[in-house]
Length: 548
Image (cartoon, rainbow, N blue to C red):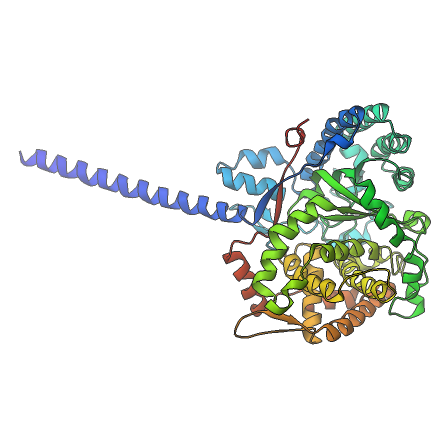
C-alpha cells in the first residue's frame, strides 16, 4: 500500500513537472511567435494591380514573361544580400519568422539598422555578400585589380587566398542566360518598336555587363505603355564602399495622360540648375535636355527595390555618361505612392503635426515632393571639381545617403522656385507641411537605409535652424515656414559643396553628427509604433493579383 502511494506520488510529480515544462515551452513559443508577428506588423499589405484593359492582348501576354524575369532578379539579389536563401529559410521553423526573413531578404531587420532577428546569425556584413567577409578596406585598396571598383564584379579569394574579381555575368551565368532568353521572347511579342529594341538590348546587356546601349534605348522609349526596369542598378546594399550594384526589377504600366502633364517640367532643368543656391563651380555641369518625367502604376517589384522599405519613385539611369548625354527619366509610381500616403503619412500627420497645419497634408503635395526629389537627382554635380573622380567614387559608402539628402532638399527648393515663377500652383504651405510630415515617415526606415540617414540629417539640421518647434504638452510639431526656407537653402549649399569637393571626411562627419535619432525623436517614433501605424508596405503581387 505504502509503495503504491510512493509510486502514485512519483507519477503525479513527474506529470506535474512535465506539465510545467510544456507550459514554459508554450509560453516561450508564444513569446517568439508574438515577437515575429509584431515585427511583421511594421508592414501593411498592399495589392499591386492596375487597369489592364488599357492594354492590347499582346501587351497582356508579355507581362507574365516579364514577371519570370523579375523573379530571376529576385533570386540573384538574395545571393547578393545574404547568400544561400534556401538553406536559411529551411532552418527557420516559425512561419512568422520566415515571412519576416523573406521581406528583409535575410535575417537582418532593414528598418532597425540591420539588427539581427534570428538567433546566432551575427551582424550583417557591411559589404553584404559582395566581398569576402574577412576582407579589410586596406586590403581592397591595395589590391592590384583593374575592375575591383566596377559596379558589376564580386570580390572573392583565389586558391592562394588573394583577392580576385568575378564579373556578374559569370557569377550568375545560368540565371542571366534564362533571363536574357525571356526578354528576347518578350521582345518578339512586343508591338511597340521602342520597347522591342530596349528588351533586345537589355537581354544582351545581362550577358555582358555592358548596359550603356540599353540605357540609351530605355531613355529613347517614349511611346510605350509597358515598361521594365531590370538588372543590377542601385548601390545601397554595399555599405562598405557603395561600389557594387544590386539586381532588381520593376514592371510598370504607363499613365499616358499623367505623363503628358508632367513632361513640361523636364524642359526647365537647365534653368533650375543655373539657379541652385551654391557657387557657380558646383553647378557648371549641364543636365541632359532629354530628361523625362512620367507616371506609372507599378505591378511588380523584385530584388533590391522590394527589400525592406519600398521605392515609390525612380530616377534612372545612374550612369553619369548617360545622364550627361541624355538626362534621366523620373518615374513616379502612382499607385504605390497613394498607398503609402493613405496608410502611413496621413496617420502620422494626425499624431505629430499641429492641428492648425494638418489641413496642408495633401496627396498632390506628396506627389510633387516625391516627383521633384527624383528631378533633383539630375541637378548639381556628378564629377568632383578637384580631380577626385565621380562623386560616387569619392564619397564611397556615404555617397548614396548624401545623394538622397540632396534630392530631397533640392526637390523642395525647386518647388519653391517654380511656385514663385507661376509654374506650380497651390499653397506653398501644402508642400512644406507635407515635406515635414514625410521626414517622420522616412526616418523610420532606419540607419541602414540611405533614405533613412538622409532624413535623420535633415531633421537634425532643420531643428538646429528653428525650422519647426514642438509643443511640450501635446507633442505636436509646428512649422516656421520662413525659417524652413532658410534651412532649405543652407542645407542645399552644404550638400552641393560636399559633393563637388568629394569631401569624404566632411560627409562622414555630417553623417556621424546628424544622422542620429535623438531620445525625444525616438519617443515620437515609438508613439507611432504603439499606435499601430505601419512603417512601410509589403506587396501582394504577381499573375494572380493581376487577374491574368
